[in-house]
Image (cartoon, rainbow over all chains, first blue to last red):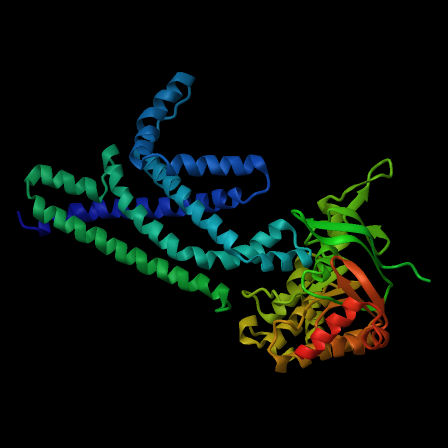
Length: 223
Length: 259
């Protein structure tokens, strides 16, 4: 079979991969901020919740998390009489974003704590509330510092989406595997898949660089 | 005599086992300009940091403007450690200028000055801008209003720091070594702004500095701090020319020789 014949199914898979990456990165970023800020909270309950979430999802395998959400959760739900069956796409996005959010939370916390004590003291002397200090003083300085690490996490997330093929989501990896089963043309198909992942990673890197440049203006070169 | 606007009553401040303020008694009257001098580790900056509520005290009571700073009265009239609400009310009375300026690097000069009035006091943005521009006129930086702090010299940044603190209309201004981080040629412009403030306003000013000439010019009183206590205090002409204590003399001699 000619390699161009693989293009269409692989492109369809790539589109699913793009969507999975997009939604899980956005949701993962929200979780990163929630848990990262939560970990700096003075409220013990909030802090414990954030720490538990971060440690559980960093300390277990993404694949097991994915299988747990997709296969184990419905069974657990059944025992409780609740329908917790998740569509593959929801289970996939949820597992990916919970995982990436746990790593991202440490990035957020680290960047917030790296804002110098002088800034917090100036904010206190001007009588800012802790909440306004966080949103108006600390985060605008911390977010530019987070961006390189967030870029790495987004790329990692893109590559991790390949795992969702194991719960029958027809992403790029799933399509490649399907074609290989059908044609046995492993070399061509996986080389193409490799290049497509790489191409997606390049685009994602460029997008993260643009975002980094955009939020970098908040720092205004001041150091 | 008028009631003091600041009063330290047997205040102790410890860092672990190190005593920074040692049963300190210290008073400042409303409108008074007081300079604190002393060797490093004598507790002079700690006095300002305690007043700005950046550093809690270990023992004793601090009074500011007739109210306890670190305590509030419970239903039985007994003092207990102050909650955040009380501290917030007390902080309104004070403004602070930091050695390292501590401007917000992600905001323009004008925004640095308007942010707290709009966000903390709820003043409308237009009004806050007007006031900021007046303050920038006063410190001679109106044309730099739209620049970012890193585009300014250290002396200019510190003048913004002064304007930013004044924008909150404090009764008491605290200056923590405001010129120590500056290159020598930039010290004058900052001191001139502080001098004008001292001359024109009924603001109470508390200044920690190593600029002895300046202290002599603007202060009503100079306090020599040593080992967490006020060892000696007097009007500047008296303290600088005729210090009574041996350690004051040694300190002044050392400072004058280093200049």
